[in-house]
Length: 281
Image (cartoon, rainbow, N blue to C red; front, side, top):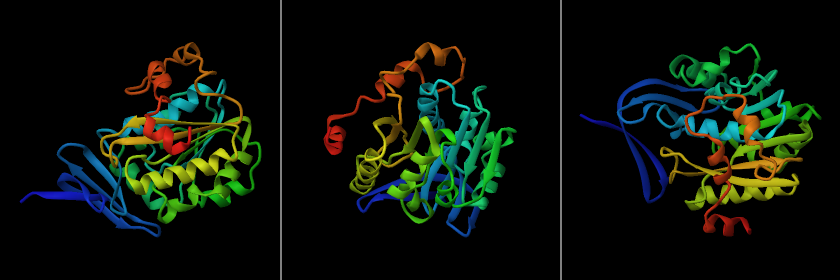
């Protein structure tokens, strides 16, 4: 008998993945955590029934949310990562010698423990001595900070449950205050394709646009996510990700990637017409 994991993308669309075996399942204080082995995507992490990552395509998401801003800041030393309990952003950040300290604020300690045990190729970044883990509410953590970070990466789940607060104007304002004068904030910006995700995308865009002088949206194709078309937001106090991009500076660091490269960096900010119309551009 075949077993299938099914995720509703809309009331009319379902994503199905054939399951070999269930590896882990727990209801934490914040969410249901499931990890299973699949035929096509390797191990899959689902939170409250929604795919958070798969071993086969997680590198696309983690490289795009990390290397775009890291390629733009001339000397990023102190970084805050919000959410990202799976550790994939940490894995990419720790490839950079310029980084001196990384604070990871993830409210769900059970998620971190599960990923470290069952998704070791993703969660490898936790082993780096520059990483400090804080199992705390991110908004409360940020409220007391000013002029602290060069870069903030918001690797949140969807805007429901524990991830909902990470899409508010108050939270983005706290991020702005916690950044240095040339700081950069990047967040996962949902999908523009289906109406539920596109509504969340536009709300996030409007809230960030009122705070940062530079805001650009960029995209990537992530097969396991709803529609496969996923957006990220690049918000900066100073640097434009196209005009100020220094390709040679990034190449000189010899960072190993599977998806990101300088040509893609430029092209990823070229948005389809329907997305530009949504954003009023």
